Image (cartoon, rainbow, N blue to C red; front, side):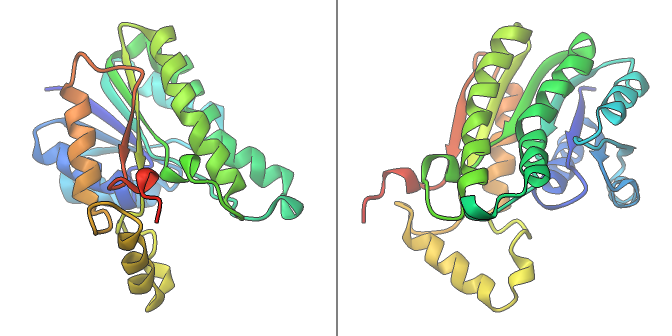
Length: 232
């Protein structure tokens, strides 16, 4: 049985990946800052849980020691959004955003590489390719993930490292908007070439494919319905 560690796996897309991986017969460990939430999901779907906080290298090192028997794949969906204009930047939140998206995965590689046999999948996002006011931090961190995947793939070869760059996905992230969520999703559909917003299965299907795609590495897979290419 192949083993997958899903970091950020207690909620949203990470939880969707963990659920599918269990269904597909993988041995799954859910890593999350909130161990209570991770354990609750793990108990529900038949997985394991441990605490991993991408902002705290000691938790990454401890997790690697706990999984000393090895892991085949690591999927990391962690993020720490800081969606403000440049004049409003907070240094600590800026560092946290880069740590979640870029520094964290590099530290995961540091501690897990000796135990990793298959691949890593990182998460970027369409904002990295569609600049706009208020998306400075998210855009730069997401763009940096593409380069992190390339360089980690070269560093860790033959371990494969790829990234996924989703567009607007109805993953639960937008539920806090209430009635405004429907408007956001409808608007996002008009920015794509396929005429709809993304669904969790769009992302999960791609993650599971990348785990098996043994001749693909150092790539970023864009899952945004052609948003980058729509001009009007």
